[in-house]
Image (cartoon, rainbow, N blue to C red):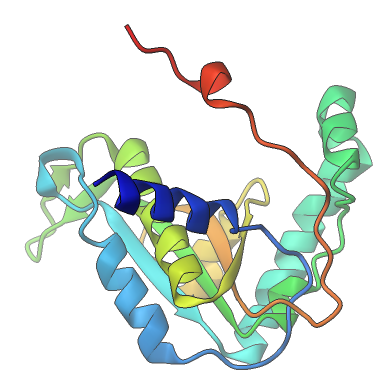
Length: 203
């Protein structure tokens, strides 16, 4: 057990978020299997309150980029507190999001606030944010284990995704997961992770 735990930790320690993607296509079957794995996540009342939209169509990716960059311009142009912008400065991010078109695949994750039955009755979902967050983490981990790089992108607000992707009103965009291979010249910032003593307490 300890050996498996250590191997898993070492593997995940290699995972890094990238912002420079190759346009090289990824096997759809790999994405499908990783989504199936994410769908096994623990969730409130087993309602499984998530929906994953896989976008590889260049035209749709372009529309998403245009809408996302519009929101990002507002964010970086004065909508975000100075403290937040200062924290992001070290990562070198700005309003330009070319990866939304360059990367071969976007997985847009929606959180279902309630279920719509065939007779239009609404059924409340429970612990939606927590459930979708766990599933998203499992998806990111699965994609990494499969050999793919990811980037979580959360322009705010994200309501434009419902319109572009034709999703119903009971679904709220949770995040855009950019998926693909790193570009040959991709760079990542030098960062460190907190120690075990800083993130955990054993009583």
